[in-house]
Every structure is written in structure tokens, then in C-alpha cells.
Image 1 (tube, protein in one colour):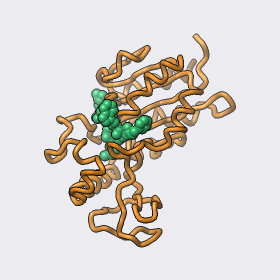
Image 2: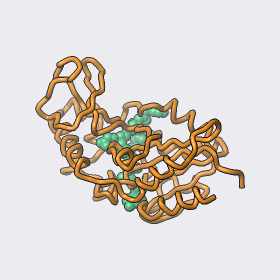
Image 3: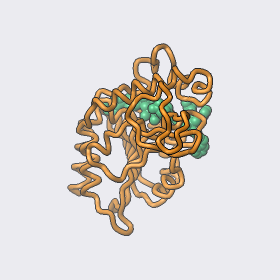
Length: 237
Ligand code: BJW
């Protein structure tokens, strides 16, 4: 087997589950009787902004009470110990909008679905660090307009930094998907993109994801156990 030099890791809500953050499709995927697909859309925000802002205010407050778990810590270890030099790299692409990868110490993290701890001004387009509620329509720190929205990617919007993700995939020789159901595109399609590029693919998840059949290998179990074991194995090689 050829040596691994370039790794793209994709993480989803399952990585943060053991930190006490609910996944999207657990408990029937409902929040106060609303499906995530009915709250996380530009149309929902236009129709009922208070409902959507309340949903995000609650989750922004909740993540600030949570701590990274052994899966985040193992990926931070990989980030520290995996060399960054020509022809050798790592990119952790996360669909998660929490900051637990960063709080565990990982640096090479790309938030393709945005971040809870940022607000985006729809008047001036500036994104500002944000920890407080948005429900009272606070002014934008940059322009003063009361036009802030959560800086997250809703259904129908373009995920962030897709060019950088596809460029990393083209260079990669290993694609690892951790704790994601494979229900939401374009992330759900990365495994097929990786296969088409001839990249080895590995899935670490509690149960088989929707795209499981596309992976060369699947390991089933909690991320807090599987990820430290996989990182140990990779660094020992
Ligand atoms: C554990 C565990 C433990 C539990 N250990 N594991 C028809 C067909 C195909 C596509 C479409 C379609 N109609 C519309 C679309 C496109 C749409 C889409 O995919 N819809 C689907 C519902 C079909 N996608 C979009 O609109 C995206 N934009 C787009 O496509 O733009 C056009 C484009 C074209 C071409 C290239 C590029 C772009 C935007 C998607 C935005 C998603 N936004 C959300 C909300 C973010 C803000 C917020 O947090 O509120 O992102 S939705 C939600 O789902 C969130 C997540 O990041 C995302 C993925 O969820 P994830 O992480 O997989 O969580 P779960 O809950 O689904 O799964 C958890 C997994 O963990 C499970 O498998 C568990 O078993 C496991 N697990 N505990 C390990 N302890």
C-alpha cells in the first residue's frame, strides 16, 4: 500500500455528539416540531425571522457550554503531528458550526457550513465574531445596520470555500468521513468525488451512512473511541 501524505477529513454532527450537542437527524430531526429543513432555509428566515433567530440563539448559547471530546482531541493531535510541507498536508473540512475542533487545538479547519460564533451583516456583508443573541436585532459592529443573521449556510445556499475543498481532494490520497449521515450535499458527494479521483476512502460512524457503500472501509462505533484509535494507527505507521 502506498504511503499516505495528503489527508482530507470530513466531519459531521456525530463528532460533537459525545460533547452533548444533538445531531440533526437524531430524535426524528425535530426542533419544537420543526424539521431542520424548515428552519435552516432563507425562506424560513424571510417568513418567520424570530423563530429562526431563536433557534440559532439557543444553539449558539448551548455550544458555549460544551467541551471538546476525545474525537476532537485526536483530530487536533493529528493536526499537530501531521507534517505540513510540499506534497504533505491535512485539511479538516467540518460541516459543524460549533468551534470544538478549534477549542481542542486544531488549526487546519474549514467550516463549510459556517460558524455559530459569527454574525453576517446582510447590509454591508461583513462577518463579525459574535457570541450574544441576535433576537433583539443588535447593530452590526461594522456599519450599524440592524441586519445581522447567523453566519451559517442554509439549504439552497452555497457552502463556503468549495474551490479550496475540491483542490484539497484533488491532492489527497486519503479521504476520511467521520460522524455524518451522508444526507446533505455537496458534502455527501465527496466520497464519490474521492473515488473518481482514485483516493482511498474510510468512514468512521456510529452506523452506516447513506453513502456507506462508496467507502473502501467502514468502521462502526462512537467517534470518541474510533477516532483516537485511527489517529494512533496512522501516526504509528
Ligand atoms: C455518530 C455519533 C457518535 C451520532 N459517533 N457517529 C436533492 C438531491 C440532492 C441534493 C439536493 C436535493 N435537493 C436539494 C439539494 C441540495 C441540498 C441538500 O443536500 N438537501 C438534502 C436534504 C437532499 N443542499 C444544499 O442546499 C446545500 N447547498 C447546495 O447544494 O448548493 C449548491 C451547490 C451545488 C454544487 C456544489 C456546491 C453547491 C447547502 C446545505 C446546507 C446545510 N446546512 C445545515 C445547517 C447548517 C446550520 C445549522 O447548523 O443550523 O448543515 S443542514 C444540517 O445537515 C447541517 C449539517 O452540517 C448537515 C449535515 O448533517 P450531519 O452532520 O451529517 O448530521 P446528521 O444528524 O445528519 O448525522 C449525524 C451522523 O452521526 C449520523 O450518521 C449518526 O449515526 C452519527 N453519529 N452519534 C459517531 N457518537
